[in-house]
Length: 217
Ligand SMILES: [Zn+2]
Ligand SMILES: [Zn+2]
Image (cartoon, rainbow, N blue to C red):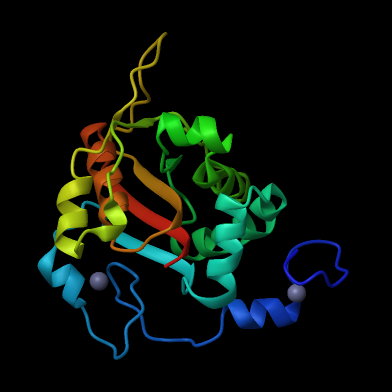
């Protein structure tokens, strides 16, 4: 799926080695890769995240970064499955029995332009592997994040607050997550601001706990 080597499914051993290269210590709370072990990390000391834990399958760098960009921006939807399997492997280790699986939503504008929500495709693999229900339309992204990439870390976190809300369905009620552990799925977690803003909205829907996972961290 990555280098063109013939294989029934997924990534070859050489590509997997590259994806999981540079094993490094991670923060026990937010899953950030650290130069030296420490708990909690600087980010967690500065920010009260709304999720209880965040984890990435591998470091968002090198081959994995290239693959995630090809998947999301290059419309290479065939990468959804092998990348989804990396997310599912992680979910099995970190959060095997969630009450619900919820992908991070993208804006309506991006959805129309891209045609798919990359986080939703990954969450499908996770929910299928765990055999747990997925709620792809639980959250709505209220406004565009603006030039998030150019903001400082503190700016990104402030900018993301209030960015997500429970989606009000045309018919019926939004899902009730009361007392549930919700597993939030995204393609990448960088500052944790987006995941934390989603987790806050899920807690407003009654979630007792939110664990966030992504393929890249
Ligand atoms: Zn390969
Ligand atoms: Zn941390």
